[in-house]
Structure formats: structure tokens, C-alpha cells
Image (cartoon, rainbow, N blue to C red; front, side, top):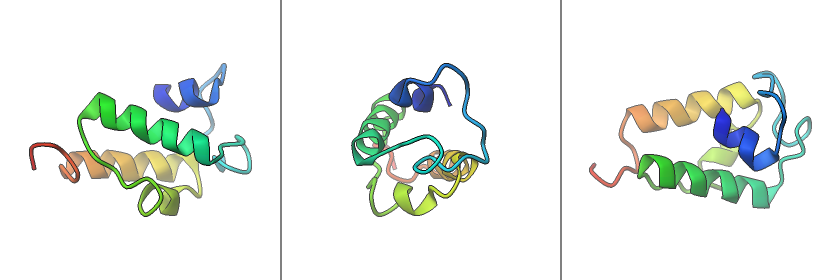
Length: 79
């Protein structure tokens, strides 16, 4: 969650039930920034608009999707 806090310059950890766009004001530039930070940190490749944005109804869903994506090794440089 720390990366999301950095991108959105939030003082506190956002509520997992919050809508990233409606409640937190995340825009397309923030999405790209967030995805680039995740890719850099975890050495993966995410198609941000075809995958992540479809899973952005809540912060919790977005984090859950990313955790599963990384756990399954999808988009990683090794496999």
C-alpha cells in the first residue's frame, strides 16, 4: 500500500473499501505512475489499462489483483 500512498501523496493508508478514482482522486497519470513503480519494484510488466484499471473498483480489489498477479508470476521477467 505504501506505493499507492506515495503516488497519491496520502498521509495515511487508504481504506481498502475506498474507490481509488472517486474517493481518492486517482487519475490516469496516477495509474501510470503507480504501475511503473510496481513494475520497477517487482520486476514485472503490467498492461495498466487492460488489467489494473479493470480491477479498480476498490483499493482492496486493486491490491488483491496485484498480489495475485505477482504471486502467479504473470508478467515477470522470469516467467
